[in-house]
Amino acid sequence: HGQIPSCTDNVTIPFEKLPDRGKAFIVFVSHRWFRPDPFGYDGNFFSGHPDMPDHSKYRLVIHGLKWIRSQLPPEMRSHLYVWIDFTCINQHDQEKKLAGVRSLPAYVERSDALLTPVCDNMYVGKDEMRTPFLEEPLPQFVQKMPEEDRNCLEKYAHMRDILSRGWIRLEAFLGSNLTLAL
Image (cartoon, rainbow, N blue to C red):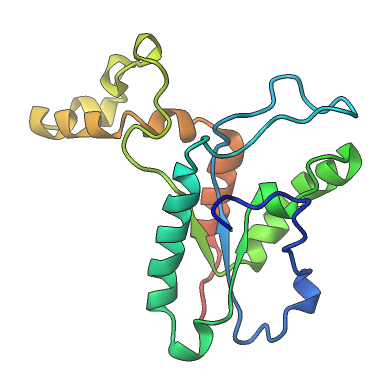
């Protein structure tokens, strides 16, 4: 495919029609859109997209999925399914979109793994917009850390934006608190 498929690409399978749920392994992709539509949906225009023009997020997701597939038992490797909002939620019909968003917790619950594609500087804005993690008031437990450890936190500055997003935090919470069983 070469890019994250759109909801109009007809590549989805309804959950209840999975060929063999006992062998299926579903990966929920929790992410921040790189190019959200600033104007919303107006009935005629939709310009938002979760990836950059160079498809860097797509490549990162594929890399993560290949690793996940390699960890699965051989009989499950050909039954890997991916849930990603841009593909699985209708982005052009406001009512269907809202219904899909409201169903996010159920999608996470039905998934076997949560994949959050993030790499260094992926979510960092322009230089003038960058704010180092440690410029924020430090929580008390961080203030008590050795300076070497506090300095180590700086490498996670790019995570500040993505982890400030409510849906991503909810998805991560649900994903970390649901039982994973193979």
